[in-house]
Length: 248
Image (cartoon, rainbow, N blue to C red; front, side, top):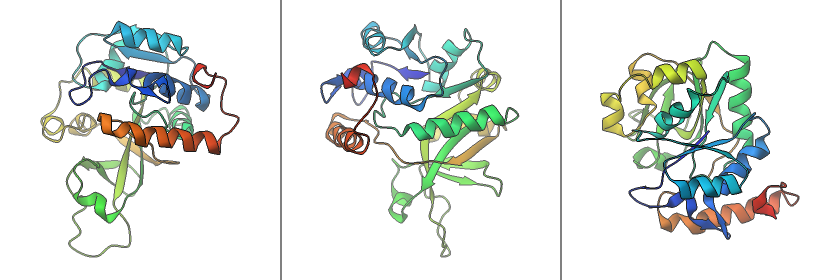
């Protein structure tokens, strides 16, 4: 499921922004299709213009109401879908690696006792001080201890291990998703602006898996050229591409 709202504070109408002449939401739908793990691709949105673009890209659509987070928007739709696993794919990452979706889906299908999973990559030292880069600290079994925009772990003593940089893609057992969104936003979630902290606040385990690669998030209009460059590079690396509408 791909949550996509129109009224982004920093970039209104972002899912419809043209990237290489194609609406961003169509690129995201194409990446999900390429992963080959979804029985159904659904764009959950509050705007008919986004829904129309999603249908043109070959996705199903569902209209949603107000939601405090993308996860809550996805849950509004998941209530009506009898599926074991739900992937929450960010609608503003048009060049996300399909391998990341496969990693999440395969893990959750083979580990039905794990309620929730996400991804991370080794970060850089500069990521520690960047509040726009979310860091994650895990225990010895790969379960998340905490996510933060602050420098975690604080480098008081030298370490050979770089900080882990969170990749904002989520997978849920459907029952866990509905349980998570039955709880109101948590205080830590509000303070950090990170929806995954609601799960940790209530003691829900989050498995953190190694990502295959990173994506380019489009947060503001100035990010569009970087996203288009990533899409061009991706086309060069995969010249055959897919048979999605965006390639025709």
